[in-house]
Amino acid sequence: MEIQGLQKMTLLDYPGKVACTVFLGGCDLRCPFCHNGELVEGEAPAALNDGELTAFLKKRQGLLDGVCVTGGEPLLRPELEGLLSQIKSLGFPVKLDTNGSHPDRLRRLTEAGLVDYVAMDIKNSPERYGETAGRSGLDLAPFRESVSFLLSGAVDYEFRTTVVRELHDGDSFRAIGPWLAGARRYYLQSFVDRDTVLRAGLHPWDRESLEAFAGLVRPWMERVQLRGV
View 1 (tube, one colour):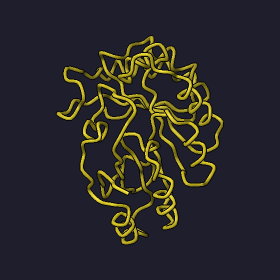
View 2: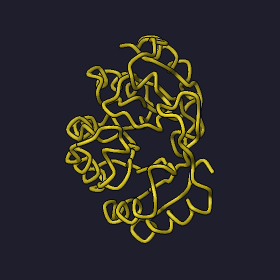
View 3: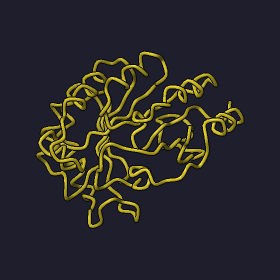
View 4: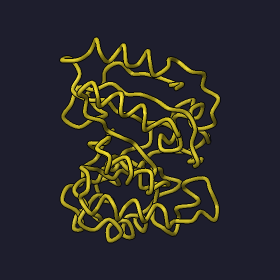
């Protein structure tokens, strides 16, 4: 299996754990604020294969607490189940990042015991989801199904929204709050502009605005925090 990238250590990606992050190419959305343009459009060359990743992880047993698998959209990759099985066989907990577009695959991997923690991106309010995901006319049913599955408590999880001045406002969060009612964790991540972002000319909100948005969703959820500010 081709793997497009490996960050050998991170203290940020897997809450409470020293982890590495595995990057897989390919995505079914085109969010204009995405930092991983090469991964999303499938242009990134393979950095290593699953055998090389396994060899790396064997050397890190006892040093790393977990493995994050991100993208792109990892659930698009048919080889993902085999990769997660290899990682789990070495004793590492797995965190999976997903946009929620494939609830059936998310459910199957979770029920197979291959995923310990899921981070699902919530792009925006349902009314602005297609615009924010770069897919006009997007069918929201799969995303709603993934949200419902995670809210059921089948696996530990968090929801998160990357907040962009041109795409999000107070109405976004007035709608997101009741949609995610009862969520364990919800993070508002400040957009950071980079050369690799898919669309130029986007901007972050200031901290005061992010705090105000957090206040709109806080009554609906157990824990709401800011990231990247």
